[in-house]
Length: 81
Image (cartoon, rainbow, N blue to C red; front, top):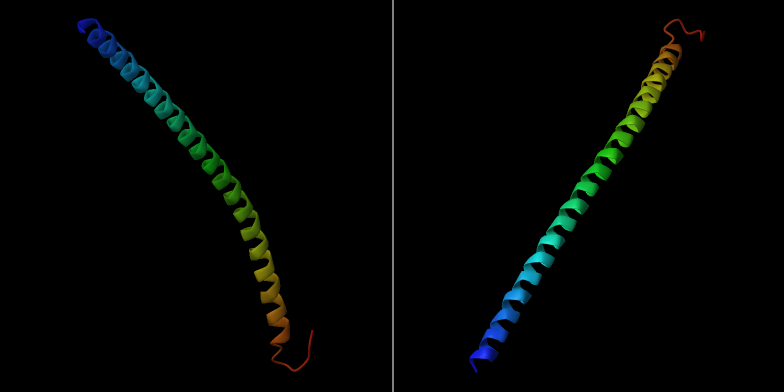
């Protein structure tokens, strides 16, 4: 009977060690996935910022053009240029 208890205890210890090892590996994998997600998000943010700068420059050009056209339309003399 004592032998059965020792064998069962040994199996429980080995099983517990395996569970701890598997849980640790899952934690490491989850950390790697989180780091990869952060890198991906940063890359997408950088790309969005670049596109935003290009669009901001284009918007500035368009606003300048609209301002020029407004000045032409607001002719005080009654004659369009």
